[in-house]
Amino acid sequence: MDTVAQTERPPAAPGALLKEQVADRLRDEIIRGRLTPRQRVVEGKWAREFGVAQASVREAINILIGEGFLTKDSGRSARVTSYSEHDVASMYQVRSVLEGLAARLVSQRKISVDAVEVELCGMQAAIERGDMRTVLRHDLGYHLKLSELSGNPFLLESAKRLLVPLFAFVLLRVVKSGQGPDAWAADLPRHRRILDLIREGDPEIAEQYVRRSYRQFVSSAYAVWENLGGAVEAHKEGREAKPKRRPNTIDWEAC
Image 1 (cartoon, rainbow, N blue to C red):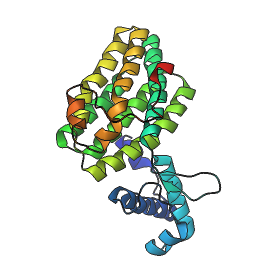
Image 2 (image 1 turned 60 degrees about the vertical axis):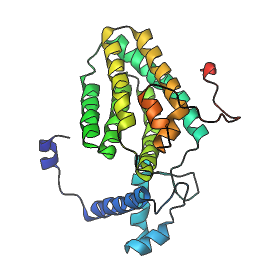
Image 3 (image 1 turned 30 degrees about the horizontal axis):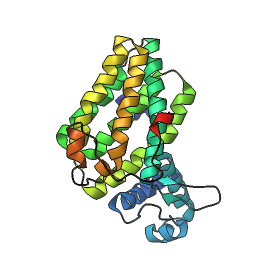
Image 4 (image 1 turned 120 degrees about the vertical axis):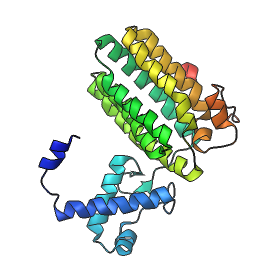
């Protein structure tokens, strides 16, 4: 958001400030690991701990659900976002279709992808600083902006629902494991290649490149985020990490 818009915005109401502050504190508890994946967030407990009304905690929880740090089923308490390896594989199966289609549509529309390039440059600068939170913020921005440029509002909404909680989960795993930016640095050429293919104006090639890229990464994604031995190096060198196959491994040929 530009400086002028920020300057002209009226001061936030005290209630709005309070829920944002509570959200900041809860988010910090999640990132630091005091609230662990799948753990319930009990409104009364955190209201007492923070010395605020339970309604403020409830509003803060809604903010963090929107950011992807928490999930909540109807009639149940919110929980810290958590995905299994099979969940991640399933999500990448959907990502490959959604973002492949986005690349195809953007290429067909023959519009500028400079806004996506801005996110890529931000990601590169953050990688050079070793700032993983900002790396992931720009990485998410890259994929959401590409989806937005598709011109399909249903694709964009689907991408948001899938990617926002996934990237929040990745941040939690990366912070816990002490992961550095090496794996993301290795991905920069692939991100740039997607934009080059879109600009070249061949929708089918752009789509297939995106889908192939996700197929290559999904088998080692979890290991990379956990900073497990050998996974990051394999990813940097373009090799596929070989985790043990599970009975519920996703069938990519069904895509």
